[in-house]
Image (cartoon, rainbow, N blue to C red; front, side, top):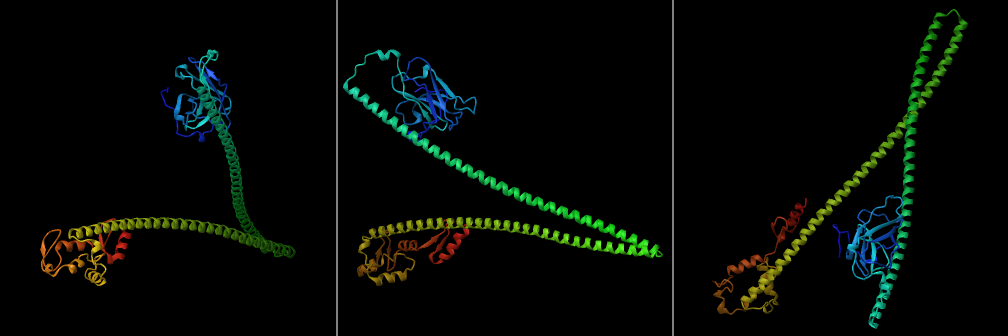
Length: 444
């Protein structure tokens, strides 16, 4: 198999997962003359976008994955990205082409190692080979016919797969189009809402500015009217002799007072409207503050739940490890018990465990033993002559009426206890609550 300086990207993707309809090969001959360069013509469909690491390989018919290429050439990207449907071509040098007369085909493989198109099969043989009389046996003819049937069947399967993939592609394109339309609709709605909010805010700001300007104008007019009233009063004091003029001035003064009263009422109404607007703005700020506070509370609650879940998982894992360790220790103690009994020449099934008084007394005498004292039955079944002097089957030391120190150590080992899986601290079984609090403190 010939290769260039850089291996192409391949994959173990099977034929069922390939897309043969996205690249179409054009003008493929039934056979090519060996010893000459060949040009491969192909066309890209509008739904396929070529990439820099795409390549075209020559595969022997019957290949299963893209790793089985014979030789390959890198494709060149289209000059005009908007016109990818134009015909493209690559040229294979004669030195890298196959030398046998097997059937081959062109395959377009993208940079992910997925086949996007395949050509019809062709051969490499001389032109005058058609004039040569080929003598074949009946078996060879049947074999060729069988191969032809298999190739036809494989071709039909490829066509069915291509049609199915095209249908899937069209369905996915329609679904994508529908999703894009929904997205555009939502974006348009969101944009309209933002525009309305902005317009409402600008309207309120404009109205507030107008009210402030009106307030300033009313104040200025009020000052002017006050100055005018002062002038009229000065004129009235200086022209006491002119009664008619004084009366006219008085009437004018009353009229000005009425105008001043009306202006004052208008100013009061505008101030009340301004207060209402300020209250509306304050209510909106309060609603925004409440929403932000509620969001923060939800985030804190989510963080607290995550922390509690982590703590519960740590405690559960620790208790599970402790349970497995205790089960292993229990199995080891059972094996040690059987081994001690075997040393003493007794079987665990032959011990008198069926006597309830013996088990209860041994359990009361040794409350730390999970399975009772396994040697109580031995002492009761022994002859009176052996009670005075006994010999330990393990350390072979003599002892009087009692228990050997070695056996006492074994009984102490059988006492159940609780061990911390983190710091290896040991707690008696009766202090189970203290042990659980201790393990929980490690998770804080």
